[in-house]
Image (cartoon, rainbow, N blue to C red; front, top):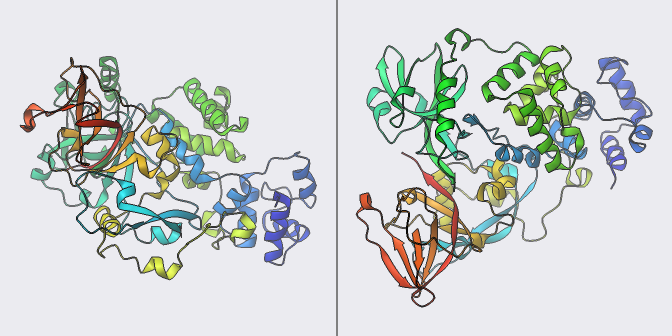
Length: 527
């Protein structure tokens, strides 16, 4: 079904025609308003003579009572796929991610437990524990979430988070732990907090100094430690309780120096001031991101190339104009690009663009109208999903109950997160039962992603346990071991680490054990 036919179907579902829609938008918004839809709109769309504006799509949502996000999808703007790109943008500073999942009516491939006659192994392929079990509506899976968390990506210059985290680490923030904090909680070395200040966000250990004052701890660079005051120039958003950690190198000394210099630019009097308009918000967000117009434009070009759509590119001069002109952009690709590069919530940009989102449509479009792919087989009814209570027995339900949230917004970003283009169940391994923990990064880890094509460990030499890659090893008895690994003369050695008092293990490569692959990503609890 082509787009014009989809428009006709959606209008007919509400007993409307294009002529009626045109008349109603003229009555509601005015014939010369950007919300107005002309009576010859079909012809213009067919000839590609006009670009649909965000105001026109909003007008359709309001008139038909179909959700605004569904109308965007119909016009080719899949918000969840587009916002997956936010994880591929290098961030100089720690940045809060937009964790909104928009397509709540989509069918999501889901899992079921495999039948086990014995306990789940300490380390095992995920495909050995769960299996594909049809599809579920996204709304039903989101209903299993017990509460909402914040997610942030660690920046390259966040000296307070490094080296405990690495640039590109995704941290989950428990906002409930921002309430009623006391001195002994802040002083614990294993607690990191996400702190908002007037120049953005910082992930840091904290020391409470009294009178609502806190100290950002930085043991690796004591000269960078800073004192902030809650409510004046800082706010604690919550405590970090989990990390999705990619394999990454330590930041350079140059980056740490730049971070310290930037920290001196704090102006406490601006912290409580909220941006008053679209341009004001762009100025503040671009400054917080540490980007020049040229750098932001270069990022927009990368986004345009990723989406194979030149309309997502924004020239440096145009970016400057957006900050000074009264009229915000009307074209959806431009607004989406601004949201991505400046880490501004999409709905916030829309509101400052003049869209009264409180009056948008509320009903989801049907699968037939929007062209939403239906599940192929074995899909479960709504009632069956609602009966899948997180506190019931079983590996999957216990996992949901423990983690309290399914972060569906990461669904299309898994390839970017893991570095594996075609991620499958065979690439994911459960390590949550491993008590041996041959590496400190595996403490409280639940899952690892493994590149099964990378089977050649390093040669002996560098003993820095934080820099060497981790590998998954399959022993002859069918059990797995995960840790830092070296290969020399046919001898495969999985190293312990000194502080953990864990011995090394040696195997004959290809006889006693073999390398499954290199660990690319670790999902672990923090604190």
